[in-house]
Length: 278
Image 1: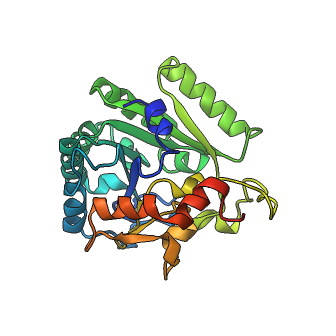
Image 2: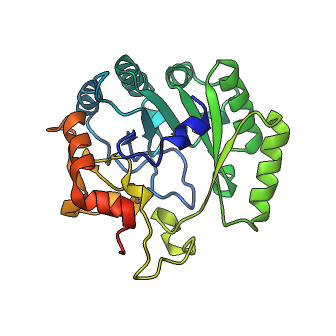
């Protein structure tokens, strides 16, 4: 699965599912939207995650399951298990990693098995990640993953179109991989550890503006197992969950119930059509 296919499904309600496997991460990036490090313990219960993904059927499943964190590759066996279960129902999996393992000359065998179990692998890289894991190390690991037959991409972030670091990084990716590895480029947002220093990426819409919200398209499994209709990190972490954004919990609900609530809610349909401000 190439990046274009993954991004192409993003606007479609319930076409994908975001799974946060753990908030733990070996890195301490200054812009981390989830505030992840190795001291936090929040993560969904593995058995509940497995049961939830196993509830997919060929006739009722997300097209794409995105495995995120924290750092999902701290749980390589779980990544393998969830990917295999999703594939049996016809879903494809993608994984986003901070590349902690690239510090070593060789990719650890359990990590490589987990990576080769997914259909798309994306590496985070930006000025903050590069302070934790060197660019050359990340490039070396991506070459190895491509050699293993996995479609790869970069998830790059910067401060905007005029960011000189971002311009240099995109040129370096182009030169290193000969234009064969695509990148998804975003601006740093003021969430998590970046909340105290990052500026808002854009001015909010006018109060009377019609501004469809794509963040309410794919259900999100939060680190406590709650399933929400919005992937905005502040909203994902907010407790209690606003009633109109609560889709269930993986301990008690299956995919069919979550998908039905996401698609049938009149409030969510309006949010996706004209936006929450309107």
